[in-house]
Image 1 (spheres, rainbow, N blue to C red):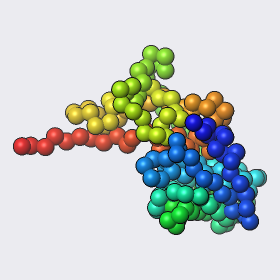
Image 2 (spheres, rainbow, N blue to C red):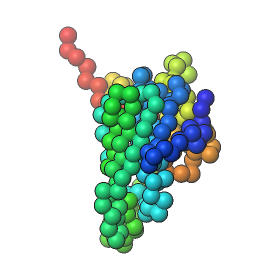
Image 3 (cartoon, rainbow, N blue to C red):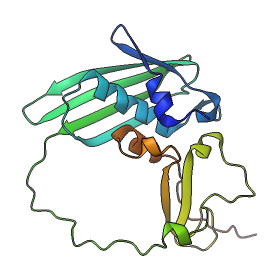
Length: 200
């Protein structure tokens, strides 16, 4: 397997663009895993403008398949005293694959606080069963992550509330302290959907 950090280290800079080829173990079908595409966009922005404040919001549009050699271009759309907006395009053999809009901003004092919001009731990782069943082979990219079912029901469970809680992290311990690896986690679990039985 190609670890996340080793994959990020393989990014090459060429004429104000970044280039990378995704190995087979990071694919989701015929395209790069979506969370990886998003992480590549964030990584390109951070490398292109090293003095950015913290990331505050991110929007990713997965336009087409990210296959073959990939090219990433990042540009500053607007820079003010406290915020920076950046646009990032990730392009593959089939054209534009992912377009990202990123907002970086300095911290501000707010009247809103989330300190009193209770933590969800979850089992500890040690007491939690694997989220992906052992008898079902993982999608290729999922082998890079460790996951435990902390609560709720699995996706597509008939009659269950549409919520599940997961302990999730990179197997690569080096990928647990930076921003791009965190972005890469977001798209790994399947979306939770309510299953409505059909009447016959």
